Image 1 (cartoon, one colour):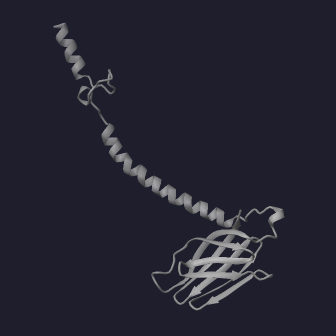
Image 2 (image 1 turned 90 degrees about the vertical axis):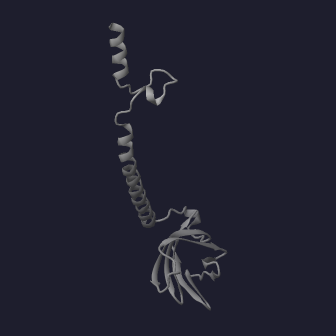
Image 3 (image 1 turned 60 degrees about the horizontal axis):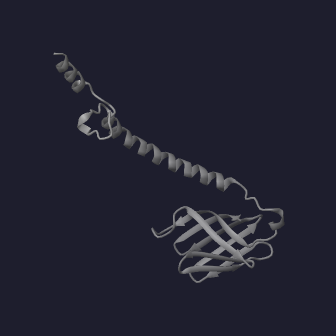
Length: 168
């Protein structure tokens, strides 16, 4: 009777952890593990997606609002890479770009900027910082001052404004 009772108790008690390395799933029962995991995974994924987009928006706003740090010995030099935000002003076509990050390069007091792979601007920087170029399909005009490049690009169907800061 004692031996039967011990077998009965050991076989009916749910085990959460296997007692030996070669344990099979049938040797122990899982009470609430899969149900909780199934409900928790979509919730965690939704929170992660919402958190990532919010974090990225906050970082973009902080970067856009900060003035770039340029060492004193490089303040007068304008050559370098400029990065920032491109915002659509007018859009009369679905092919016009949405709000995005913009990049331009200045070398030898000349602005090199590609609106599209077929629309390239090579614009000299004037001594007062003005930039202006007109090509058959588009026009670029703006100003460079204090490490900040502000310009607008306009073609037949789109107009985009760029606010770029010098990066080192």
